[in-house]
Length: 187
Image 1 (spheres, rainbow, N blue to C red):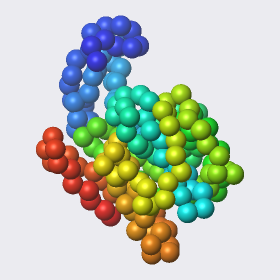
Image 2 (image 1 turned 135 degrees about the vertical axis):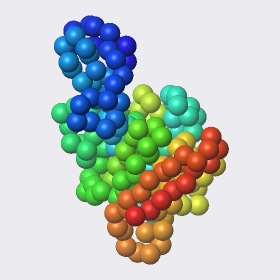
Image 3 (image 1 turned 120 degrees about the vertical axis):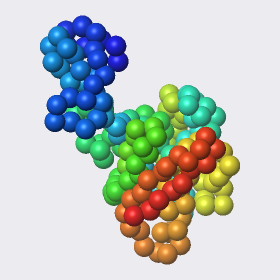
């Protein structure tokens, strides 16, 4: 950030009084510009013994597979955002949604929330952000072509719970250790 969105003056990166982090602060109008993590929400659309995956038609990770998910919008709940993303990416109407996982990803300033839900009538088709959508069994999941580590981890947990015959809510962090290596922590 270079300029204040309130008055247009040049901002400074300082630790405001009573704070413990550097913030962009406008010396002219004293506005403190907080930058907070982005909320990403999505779902695991279930139909019979399959789940719905979307092949990305946009960057990042163009051409790879993911679950329908994206950034929350203002004026919507987390669950509403997950259902909206399923509609936008897969023309999928979701029912009976329940929170499945919450992952913090500090190195990209994101928090992911994923819901399990029933895909209404098992119907879906590619939306603007998807090149293709597909209902897949566990054996058909293209593990090497999953777009994001958080989606891969969510799917692993989903199938572990499915095998166990009981679903629970999962919490964790995905920590970047190096450009090629991550660590997943579960709580």
